[in-house]
Amino acid sequence: MVLRLLFAPITGLTWIAEQLQERVDAELDTKENLQKQLLSLQLAFDMGDMDEAEFEAQEEELLLAIQELDDAERQAQAE
Image (cartoon, rainbow, N blue to C red):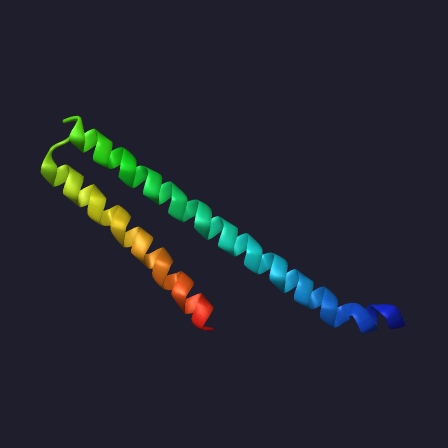
């Protein structure tokens, strides 16, 4: 029982670090997927599979999503 109390802060910090790592990994995966979607979108447009208006609308959505992830990452680092 005494050992649990002594190691509780370390255990808590370890848990927090694991949670942060999981969140960072998930955000990186999300950002990477968005970037892949953007590349795929560019290829589809270049090959003539979509018109310019459709391309621009989808491109804007993806770029905004990437920007939101970047902003969230900067805010998390500032805290």
